Image (tube, rainbow, N blue to C red):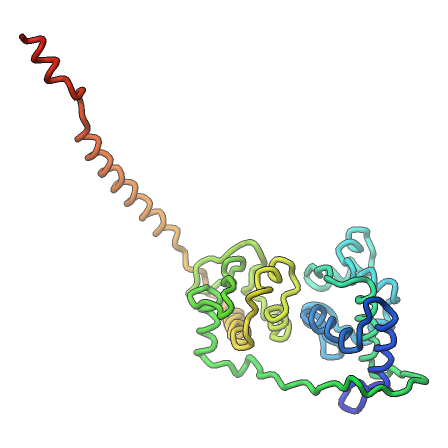
Length: 296
């Protein structure tokens, strides 16, 4: 068997995927294949831990051919536009969430598929000599967002709205996203409304997106200004609270304030310009000289 009792890959599995990945150029180690999956795919998918934004990928190689998986991972939207029935069905099933094209080569994607295969409980590496060069570190337990304090939720709201700056200097979420909340003004419309994001993506999904953004615009914005674990945790806690309290909530509407301020500024400027205009020179500079000469 390739997995031990704790579902950690054995050295036979490590060796198998290492051989597969090294068959391509540039060579990728087993840890490289695993890192590519963790960096890009685990934002929306798990292997054996249930659905996130997208489906659980456990045993996906038994449901789809390697060729289909390769083409779908390379560009799911292309397959959807071409009318692939399975791709269209998955797109509809998962709220028409667009899966971004990965920044990987075809060989790297094949390595990811190989890594997914090795996580199957009944995967067997036959005739392989163990390679102990790349042991896998155990996963560190993650604190549940259900344990978030009121201060952490407040900090999440301040980070979302931009009232508190992110430590890396990145933009506040509200510049692109909207959340229906009495304590926030209306947010941006460039990206999805996040009011019910926690219900749609749950804690793991949102946290994965915040720490490893898969979407091009978001990835570009935070590439040199990543969020800390504490900031991501507080933002997830706030989104959970916003999701739970969304009914009866509304964003703060400043429209009437803007209109009132606009009229006040208009009349103020009108008064200033009227005063300036009334004191203008109404005759030429030499009018008095001209009048005197005419009189004489």
